[in-house]
Image (tube, rainbow, N blue to C red; front, side, top):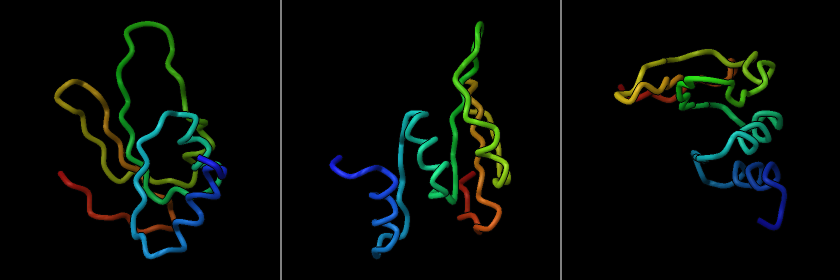
Amino acid sequence: MAEPLASTVERLRHTSVRDIGVHAILSVARQLLESSLVNELHLVIAPRTFGTGRRLRDSLLVTRQLVTSRTSSSGNLLPHYHHSSHRPATSPQ
C-alpha cells in the first residue's frame, strides 16, 4: 500500500462505500483503533493453554460497548463491540 493505512481508510470513508471490513493482524487493528477509525469491532479470541497472548491496549476499548458475545464451536470467544457514539448494525445470531 502506497499511502498510510489510516489515510486510506479515511479516504474510503468519504466515498460512497458504506462499510469497510478489515480482517487484520493485531498491529493493523491497533493502528485503526488509535486513529479512531473503527465504529464496530468483531474479535476472535482464541484460548491459550500456557503463556500469555498479545493484547489490545485496554485504553483502546474504553469508548466501546460490548454488544454481543458468544463462543464458537471450537471454543473461541467472539465479542462484538461498537463505539459508544455509533449505532451498531444488526448482528447475526
